[in-house]
Structure formats: structure tokens, C-alpha cells
Length: 601
Ligand code: NFS
Ligand code: SF4
Image 1 (cartoon, rainbow, N blue to C red):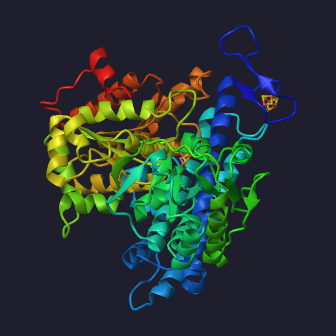
Image 2 (cartoon, helix red, strand yellow):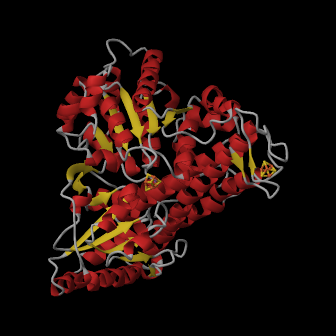
Image 3 (cartoon, rainbow, N blue to C red):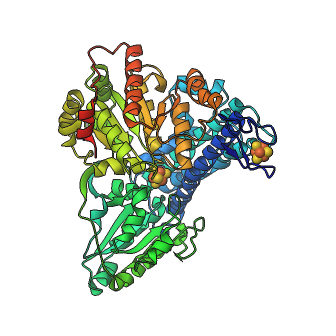
């Protein structure tokens, strides 16, 4: 393990061998990894939260300056969020409510004292744990800053104390920045509901102008969607010899435009370079996060224009089109025009045939209506099916792809094994895209891969056994869904009582660490694959696992072997079923080598 927190180092320490056991300053292994881990949480929470802040700003613009191109699509959700934020709704115009909601949301970032508002959506016993341990975030920015402060050289030197702040900052992401991003995006662009789409590089089109939007913030991609549908631009594309405009996504932006418009997904994070390599991409438009620095050099090999749009994310070698929310639609039009003008410059094109259908759009609202019926949205049928054992439990499988392991393999094998064991899987991020490509998000996959009980439920409702809930900020949808399951009744009093588990089999981004910590702190057993850069300190690892379970009811585990990861999750879910007294008649399906080979991708 390595510390670079001051210039007496870098200090490399060797916890296992003969080398130094502390840094120059005396920092022990557990302090070094706690500080590193804390700083990953801070960076991840900062990324999600800054995204949330931009969305709040766009909501303000939608209310005050409709000429910006933004508008309020979901008034019901606006009123719901207003109530949570303490904004009056009775006898008020939508515009007035929206201005207050946006300003209140913006204020949560800089709030100094008190409690961030969305915390109150968690079950009461969960809030009580957080209050007792002083973990309720006071304000989003404040917790991130304090975490950065406490992890500077010579400040917080107690790994447990560092992680208390790490947890508070992580909660300010999950129940703060990410939740603001998701909820306000739903107000602006609509709450997702089930929609058909297609996924994989085969969605790129030989005959159309291909525009790939890559990154994270729908404040950009939604405007591109509008621009790409304008008759004038479509006609321009035709005048250049194309059939039309094909707007597709990569990474979480792809998930956003898929969920709200059914637009195609070209791939997840490890396919961004491959999309360019097809030679069929006229423009790749990026904003922030998970954008490979290799792209400018790669785009030079083809005619592809790489277009950066955010003042926060510039790349030498890219064309910069500053995108400000104030003139969003206008900028989007210019970018689309530039892509079209580039169509005649195409060279050799080689688009793989692979593409797959999927159904996406399972927001927590959509799940209630799907299960409970159109007029009585409820989690009761889900809870009932868990109690009666048709569904063993629920797993969230999320996160990135990582070239340290075979692309997508961890996600797909894990999810197949979970659904075969009657575990309903909810997904976000690049993990969702991985499983969609493998055909797990079409209803027919229930018959092919799911256990008998889960398949029966899927058949009745007409849903796939693997539900796509959105981008990584949309992990906050899972937090709300878990809270709703608790409130619906029959499955205990807190999230930590539920037969649920989480996993990020191929994580790579710091954002994944923030997400892992807020799920654990919300009471969820969470397994990461690939390895976690804390394992050199047994003391710290014990803290994240056993000690966290005692304190918070949720814990971390690290397991690079996917089959063992599935076992850990299934065992945990069985343990929770037993504690709830609903464990009767649920045998674990054991996977032998033969079955695993059949499922392998
Ligand atoms: Ni999430 Fe989405 Fe993908 Fe990982 Fe990156 S795109 S925010 S961080 S790599 S899942
Ligand atoms: Fe080394 Fe301590 Fe400085 Fe870290 S803070 S680089 S362990 S001297």
C-alpha cells in the first residue's frame, strides 16, 4: 500500500514482509488505507453531487427561462419532491414551486447544520442508527470537505473515526447528491417507465449519421435528443447522403436516454474506444466522468470528431463546444450540425452485427405500478412473493467494467446464478448494459435462466427477471425502493432486515466506492469483485466487514471469484430469510462445473 498525502513520502509499506510497517510519519497500515479509502469516497461523492447541482441549476432555468430549452415534464413528481423539501404546494403555480424546489435543492449542497432532507425517506430505525452514531449529513459539500480535511497528513489518525466521516460523506451522496440528481432529472425529463430498446455496437448504423453521446449528465443528452429530431437537421443529414440521424449512448448517459426515450445503447465503459474503431461515428460528444483520455488519439485514426462540452472536462486534441444550460438547445443544434457535416468524411466502416433487445425503465415508481397494477401501485405483491418464497430476495448488481477481468463476464455470470436462485436482480450503470447485451433483460430470459418461482412471477407480471433502473446516480432509486419495501411491511423494520444484497463485480471508479459505502451504511451486505485497495490492512478490512455489520447492519465483502460472490450473496439472503422466519422450503440451487460452463459467456 502507498501513501502520497505529503511530500515526506511517497511511503510504500509492506504489511506482509520485511519492509517498513509504517510511513515516514508513523502512519500505520490501517490509517493509510482508511485515508485512501476516505479520499475515494470524497471523490466519488463529489462527482455525483456536482452532477446533482447541475441538474438543480437546470430546473431553476426551466422555471425561470423556458427559452433555455428545458421544461418541467413531471408535475406530480415536482409536487412530491417539494413536500420532501418542505416547499409549499397548495394553490401555487408549477413555476413558483419549481423555483423553490431548485433553490432548496441547491441550498442542500451548502447547508452547514441540521439534516439533509432526503434522509427522512429512510425507515425510522435506520435514521435512528445514523443519529446515534452522528452520521446524518449536515450538508453535502460540508461532508466532502471535512473528509478531505480529516485525511490530510497529521489530522485524523484513527481509522474508525476516519470512516465515521467517510460514511457521513457517502450518505451525503446516496441520500443527497445522487438522489437530488435522480429526483430532479425525473421532474425535468420524466420518470422512466418500461421502454423497449437495443444494445451493443450493432446499434451503430451504416446509413445514418451516428452521434455517440458519452458521459453522465442528461442536461446535455436530453438537448441532443431534441436537436437530433428537428426536421431541419434531419433534412441536412439527408442532403449529405445519410438516411437520418442515429443518436446512441455510451455509459451512464446511454442509460439516461435509453430509459426516457428508448434510444439505443452502443455499449458500456469499455466499449467507448471500440465504438470509435468502427469508423462509423461522426461525432462522440462527451461531458464528464468515465471518459477515457485515450479518445483524442484514437479519434485521429478515423474521421470521428471528439467534442467536449463541459468546462469541467477538457481534453487536448478534442473540439470544445462549451455547453451552458442557458443556451442548451442552441449548442446542441450546433453540435449535431457539426456531426452531420462530418458524414461525407467517413472512411472504412466496420460495424459488428451484435445487438440485443431489452426492456429498461424500472424506476421505483414503475416497479410499484407494474407489480401492484396501474391504479394501486404498491410493493405489497413483491413483499408477498418474497414471504411466500417465490422470490428468494432482491439483489442490486451495479457498477463499472474493469479490464483486469474479462469484459462483462463477472456481471453476467453473477446475475445468471442469482436469478437461477429466484433472486430478482435490479441493475444500474455499466453492469446493466453488460447484462442487457447478454439478453437477460427481455421477458423471455425468465423462462431460460430464472428459477421456477421467479419465472412464475415474471410471467404473471410480464417483466424480465433483471430490471434496469438507470444510471449510477439512480442507485438512489434502489435506496428508495428498499425503504418502500420496509414500509410496506412483512419483511422487518429496517433495510438491514430485508433479504437483499448488493454487488459491484467489476468496479473501477471512485464513485463505486462512495456507492458501496452508502449501501453498507444503509444496511446492505455489499460484495465487490476485482479487489479493494484496503486489503493490505487486516485491521481495516475487519472494520469494513465485521465491525460495520455490528454498527450499521450492513457490511463490505471482497470476493473476486464470481461463483463464490454469488454464494456469499445467496447465503446472506438466506440468513435474513431465516431471521424473518420465512426460510421454509427454499433450497439453494448448487451450480456444478457443468452448469457454470453452460451459463458462461
Ligand atoms: Ni458508474 Fe456511470 Fe460505468 Fe462505472 Fe463509469 S459509466 S457512473 S462509474 S464505468 S458504472
Ligand atoms: Fe508518508 Fe505519512 Fe506523508 Fe503519507 S502522510 S506520505 S505516510 S509521511
